[in-house]
Amino acid sequence: MAVKTVLVWQWGKRGAGPRIAVDLANGLASLPDVCVRLSLSEEAEILHSHHAPQDALVFKTYKSALGLFGRFLQAPLIITQLFLSMLRNRPDVAICAMPAPLDVLMAHALRRAGVKVVTIVHDARAHPGDGYPFQMLLQKALISQSSLLVTFSQHVANVLSGDAICRGKSVLSLSHPPFGGTEAPPPFSHGGKPRLLMFGRLLPYKGLDLLADALPQLEFAIDCRIIGKGPQSPELLRLSAIRDVTVENRWVPEDELSRLIAWADVLLLPYREASQSGVGAMAAAGGRYVVATTVGGLSEQFSANPQAVLCEPDARSIAIAIIQLLNSPPPIAPVPDSAGAWQELGQKILNAASN
Image: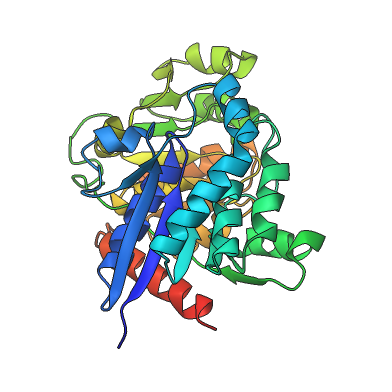
């Protein structure tokens, strides 16, 4: 069997995008007769973390909004350079692990070189306050250059399928694999107060107001941390004033994520809307308990997880779910095979791309 060459690229600087690219590339590389090339932004935080890939092609992206504008002014030159590079080392398939601003340039060069482009679309619509300017416009341009679209929830796939830009394109709905390298001791093994954690972008759609109303309804002492980056808001001030709750408004570095998972017993996802949760994928990999609302793709993601409790997106339901879980935690399930899950994801993408 001929060796299939696969290019995986993601040109975001930090967050879930580069991590997904690395785990997907590792999963593909473990398949027989598959050669993988990984391209990351030279600014990618993961390149300096303990999850750093052994071999990655780095691409000069930008350091500021002005730098991004300058790169778009150079678009014809960049596309030509990428096109010539693809001709010299032409992959059979190219997979964009998560859309970022400059990806449309790579996709255009790949299509000119006759390479099939697969894009993993994480959000069919921008969440309020999240993303970057012109995010959806650039994502649509990327989608127009793609032959196959992959989502991590049927919820996102359904929304995409109704968009005119996706008409005639295959949309493959798969599950978000648990992130590799986030193993942790069993929940509650520390013997102290239950540890609740919410982390990620601290934005209103994440249900900060619902959590602020839910936590005071708990009937026992807890240790709760709200960690992530977001604008100062009345909801964060309310959370800061609750006993046993600490708010840390800051960016969480890549190498701290595993330690946060190991610290927590329960991950809180009190969202008002969601496509799916990368944070939830980390919790699954670490064997954490999860309380999540039944919005967007969260129900799909956690309905088969024996350590997850799903509830309605209102404060009373969230409080009852936390109380129920802490009073009667389900049995601890075996930690999922993260490496195997990413390998399976890679195989399914390649199978669909070959059709």
